[in-house]
Length: 365
Ligand code: PRP
Ligand code: URA
Image 1 (tube, protein in one colour):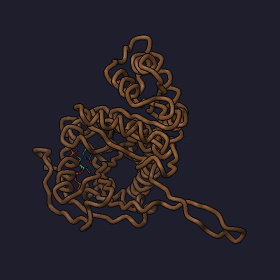
Image 2: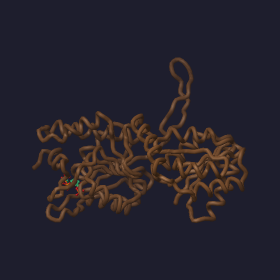
Image 3: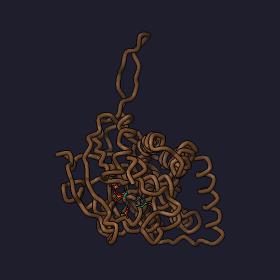
Image 4: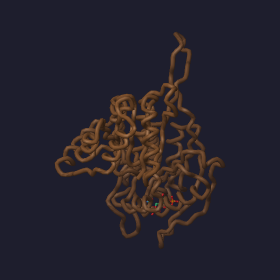
């Protein structure tokens, strides 16, 4: 089990002691600041960093410590999927887990000493969620959170996200229609890809920058230098690239040529050209269709063999079979899909799907 730790300066000493304790167990630990007890470190930085990692499934649980623990818990609970609970003793820690299924434990570095802190952490880690009536209550919180989510994205599982946004769903309905022309199909695929990336980049890190407006000096924000690579799977993935480049114009573009053998449905590779610094980039592999998952898995294999590490897969329509295959072969890859359809037909086409995406984009048949 992976545990993410975070503190501000006031929680640093207790975090250090909890970290030493956890490193002597079978848990694996990630530490996301603060780096020392002397320099002031704003608690929301650690709360958001740890909260997002737990919500995304990169870590199973998180522990956040500031002076009282209160600010940490307030900040972390802003992140959909986080259930952060403050505990000052073993009793509250036990119930935070058994009744509330807290996935983040908040503690007060100025309220709790090292020995008590370890006891609290042990109690929380080794208690189990009771489910039953408590599950119904945590599900109510989840349903409220989903209905008030501003992101219009839905986490189906730790590594599968779908999109509720009405514009995405409306345009998706149009490309499913067999009477939609090639021209309109092409435009809509670009638009949907752009809208999806707009949502997936919601959490890109920002840094403050000083700018001078015609009126006065002010602090504004700038993206803090994430490098992105977009990799379409040819042919159909090409149809999504321009829509994404409109939002991330500095992204580099690699290409992977794969086609599905019509008899075996196995992917056949015919081209691969990736940016030289692929290992340093956030990689988005794009393809409108995730059917058996053969093409996407082979593309991810290729990218990994060339040094790619942080990979996500963006597709318009996915079949459950394809999602399972990619999850099984590449459990580290996030899948973003505008829709998860019902199943594959005997020819490996997605039902209801939209037919052959490449043919519909390029007017071939
Ligand atoms: C389509 C689609 C995917 C693949 C999905 O490409 O664009 O790449 O099928 O199927 P899978 O999940 O079962 O592998 P296709 O092989 O038709 O090639 P094309 O894009 O050149 O038309
Ligand atoms: N490839 C497509 O283009 N469509 C499908 O439904 C399956 C694979």
